[in-house]
Structures are given as C-alpha cells and as structure tokens.
Picture (spheres, helix red, strand yellow):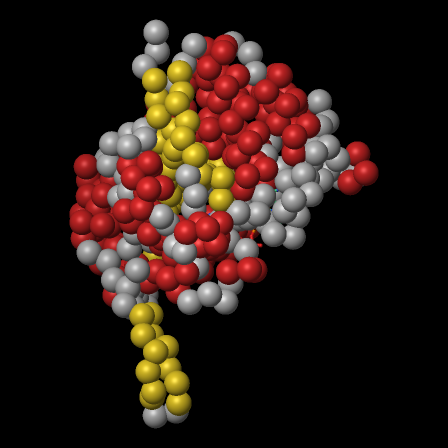
Length: 359
Ligand code: NAD
C-alpha cells in the first residue's frame, strides 16, 4: 500500500476556495484510480485569517504546513485588506510563509496548449513551440531588503534595499541548471548587470558555476531585453533563471503568452522534496463568488506536486492528459471562451476533468 502523504490545504480568499475545491476532487480521484493515499488538513491563511485570527499567517497554519509533505494553496488578498498596515496584509503572509518554509525558488511552466493558441494576444506563429519555465528566486532581493520612510531635502522619501549573497544566488542557479539538464539544456540567466551591483554578483556567480554544467548552453540576458524577447521569440527560451523582482514581472509576462492566467500552475521549492503548489493567479476579487473561475491552474498545480514532490509521474500525466482532453473537446470557462455564452462553470470544468482522469 502506498505511503500516506500529508497535504496541507489552504484555500485562502476570493476564488481560492472555489478553485481549491475542484483540485481536491482531483486528489480524491487519483487516490481511487492509482491507489495513492493522501491525508489533507485545512488551515486559515491570508485575508480570512486576518479577519478571524488577527494575523495573515497564524502559527497553527504554519505548523500544519511544516508537518506536511506538500502544501496546496489557492490565493490570498483582496480590496478589503489593501489599505491595512504592512503586518496585516495578506501579501505579508505570503512572503512570511515562503521564508518560514525555506522556499527559495518559484517554478512556473508556461506551455502553449494548441487548442488555446487563439486565446493569446500574440500571433499563433510567434507562439508556436513555446514551452518554457521561469525559475524565480523567492526569498531574497528587494522584497526582503530594509525598507524605510524618511524626510529628505525635498520632503518625504522611501527606500527599498536590494541585497543578494553568493549562497542565495548559487543555490537557485544550480537548481535552474539541473532543471535545464532535464529539458532542452538551455539556460538564460536574466539580470541588469549593466546597472545593478546585485546583478553583477549574480552574473559572476553564474559564470563561476557554469563550468559544472558543460552540457547546458548558457546565455546572459538583460532584463529589459528579456521582456522584449519573450514577446518576439518566446519559443527560443527553455529555462529562464532570475532574481525575485525580475522573476515576478517576467513570469507574469510569460503567463500572458498562454492567453489566460487561469491556466498556469506554479511550485515553490526549497531544499529536498517539500514544495508549495499554487496557481499563478491571485484571488480575482472581480469574479469571486460567481462560480466562473477557471480551476485548471490549481488542478495543474496538483499535477506539478505529483511530479516534483511525490514522483507520481503516472498520476501527473493522467491529470495533464485529462485537462487536454477536456479542452480539446471544446469545454471552456469564460476566461478562455471565445463565446462567453457557452462558458461552463468552475464546478463543471472540475468535474469534467475529474471524469476524464484515467490510468
Ligand atoms: P488576479 O490574478 O487575481 O486577477 C487578474 C485578472 O485575471 C482578473 O480579471 C481576474 O478575474 C482574472 N483571473 C485570475 N484568475 C482567474 C481564474 N482562475 N479564472 C478566471 N479569471 C481569472 O490578480 P489581481 O487582480 O492583480 O490581484 C487580486 C488580488 O489577488 C490582490 O489582492 C493581489 O494582491 C492578490 N494576489 C495574490 C496572489 C497569491 O495569492 N499568490 C497572487 C497575485 C495576486
């Protein structure tokens, strides 16, 4: 009998609970079909935790995650908490959980589904063959550096500090080289070495460890150029590795290549096999509670969890195949539907995918 895997489930805010509910049905179906065993536990996080517990990341939620093999997260945030002080913002909880769980890399695949090429704002011929991964450093850089407000000569000033050390750069770059090795053996390291000191350290570190991966073709790309090339020739990229803020922006841009943010999964990994899996999108307050959110990103995050944390490649493939089958049959939630009047609900999409999962 398969070992029981503990999964901490955090639905969060907005559409989070709606999409996570469908992903949990997928977990259940794979248990039935493949004989894997999962024990799920639910915790409060984000805006709902601020309302109910006075903090975005309650200690018991953090401990539940630490005792688990993997975490499945919906999304957090919303206008209700946007004007809260820093410590009482859902995003502060997100940064905190990544740091507390030692998750130093965020991995986002951007794959073009043939049947959805028309949903992208780019021409289909530009997108042809696009299958890339953005590996973003998650726990360093400007998001975590010292911040301050002060009075300057010209009135109030704000300062954000960007700090990276060699160890932080090396571990993420090595992970990206390893991922590149399992794919087309091409790595683009993205920085702003013509201007930023942290980028110069980044580039030196990449060059120092590159000889350990002679089979991987390395290129350095400046972040502004990368932003352009992603729109001009996205299929020329395979694995992109970059620091926290550049990765935040570039991975959203890569997400848009696929046409809908509702399709994109992500993994946040630390050392070892533990990972936190979540859709790339946020809590989508504009459509929350309407039952129309696309659950595919969260469902594909379960597939990513199976691959990267559990090594359940058969079940991961079955989920990915089921998603493709349902899309090929023409079923669409409203974010990816050409004819919105034909769009199906979150629940219908989840159930169609669940029923298409086969061994
Ligand atoms: P968003 O991703 O929530 O929404 C952007 C647009 O995409 C909206 O029009 C939304 O309706 C649509 N969209 C997103 N996911 C969708 C889905 N599954 N199906 C269909 N349409 C979908 O980004 P935003 O509006 O910038 O942020 C909203 C809130 O989410 C903010 O409070 C933000 O801080 C938070 N946020 C959280 C996370 C996270 O939890 N990791 C990530 C990004 C944003």
